[in-house]
Amino acid sequence: MKSVWKRLTLGVAALGIMIAGAAVASAQEATIIAVTHGQASDPFWSIVKNGITQAGKDSKVNIDYRAPETFDMVAMGQLIEAAVNQNPAGIVISNPDPDALGPAIEKAVAAGIPVISMNSGISAAEKLGIKLHVGQDEMTAGHKVGEKLKSLGLKHVLCVNQEVGNAALDQRCAGTEQGFEGGKVTVLPTTSDPAEIEAKIQAALTSDTSVDAVLGLSAPLVGERAVAVVEKMGVGDKVKVASFDLSSGFLQAVADGKALFAVDQQPYLQGYLPVTFLALNARYGTIPAGNVASGPSFVTSETAAQVIEKSSQGIR
Image (cartoon, helix red, strand yellow):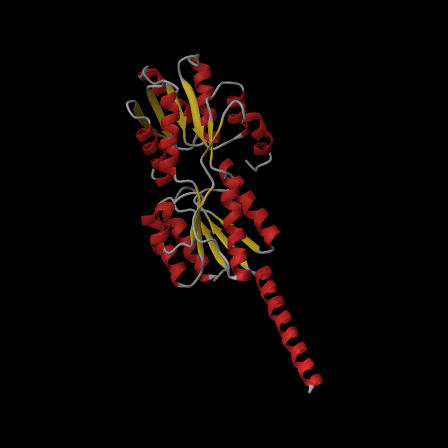
């Protein structure tokens, strides 16, 4: 009887080991698809992709990163639907236009595929059935920027939006206006073309001499261009520059006193954490119960030098 019981016990233990091994193997073979509105060639999104790629290696899952060739919500919705048809272990998305992308996201949720949003779309996450969001609340971040600029005695901010129609960027300018109570915020729409950005900033500063601050919504695309224009025009003593997000060039400008500060939302974490969470979900069925705030935090002249090295490595 004892030997029968012993064999039964050993059999159950072996079965448990086999099941656990199968679960691990399943997770290791799992594919997680990331669909973002930003191309990996963009300095900001290259950091996001670095985080996604490293998380795939660390979690031992297959990664597939996709993005439309330009900021195109129709094309992005099609990419999400194509991802749903592949039935991956999870989908990571950015969600700059919840109205446009909502139907495609809901198809993923209806198919039982766990979805995590990152970078943009926090306000629509719960409504669309998204598991959680990794990023910063852009209205809150903008509000803090407005408060900081106001505390520095500035009066008129030029908020340069290089991706009109991106809800997250619109919220940054709107939040800045809320926090900049008593001052004036003018939104300057442009594209991501560096020449156009510089030309429009210079024209705006020339036509309205009351502008005493230029706020970029992207450090590599706008912040660096704004610093260059202010230097070229010789108005650095009057017009100050600040920017959301980081780049090694803009951080150097902050360290050198040519720019006030950069707002860090940690794009590496925005890429890394969703993949890690979805891999853990595939392996163990566990996932965080709420959103994860990756920002905002301010990088000033006192801290810029510490961040520059990691920024040049594609991590900050």
